[in-house]
Length: 102
Image (cartoon, rainbow, N blue to C red):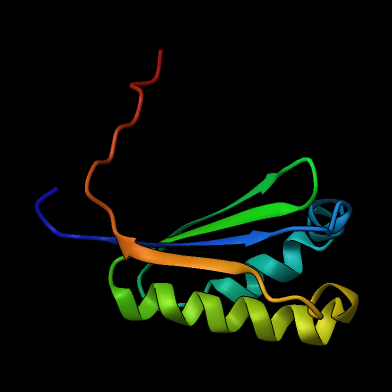
């Protein structure tokens, strides 16, 4: 990668319905995340006991802002899921692979 990008991964456990609730509010989440500086992508993964969200940004400050934004958004919109903080990992992307469209 010529220009480093950064990702932030937030892992929520013991919240089996979190992903479903977030999907219901997808438009709100999109509106909240669009102002994050350098945002490239936001992903939500449903797991067996919770969810994992992933943000990809142009720089570390955008990735870290996405952590703050998601915590604030959950506290305001879905407070029952904000009682236990997620495990957060933020770092530089080192490999980016994407499939070519068929």
